[in-house]
Length: 151
Image 1 (cartoon, rainbow, N blue to C red):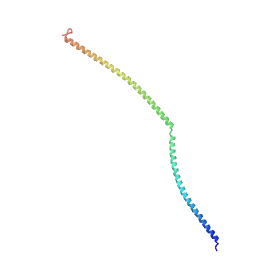
Image 2 (image 1 turned 135 degrees about the vertical axis):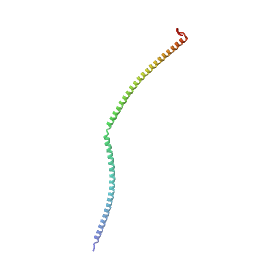
Image 3 (image 1 turned 120 degrees about the vertical axis):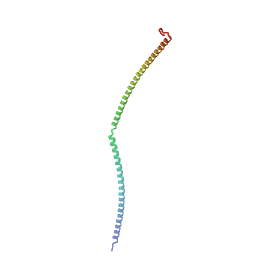
Image 4 (image 1 turned 180 degrees about the horizontal axis):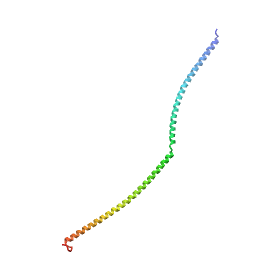
């Protein structure tokens, strides 16, 4: 006959093994879920890393451009350009002042010449009027017979 203790022990062992297998199945399920979640986290982390990489590359390019730009030299160049402009303005001011002085001198000389021409013209007109008046007086004297030897 069969030993009942032995069967009971075997059934308990089978039940224990089944329970253990159930726990292992649950653990495997949990591990599978954890793996899915870990994969999702890794994918998200990869996207973050790619974003950070793009940002880092852009920042590096900006830093490279800023490093290549010598701000001090640019300021010196601007200062030099402003100095050159100041010199040009100064030279232009001198030319304008000289030109204005020359024009004023020429204008004064022209006014003197116009005054001389006007005075000379008045003298000529006065001389012509005097000659005309004398001629008229002489003609009147001749016509009136007041001049000796006149008709």
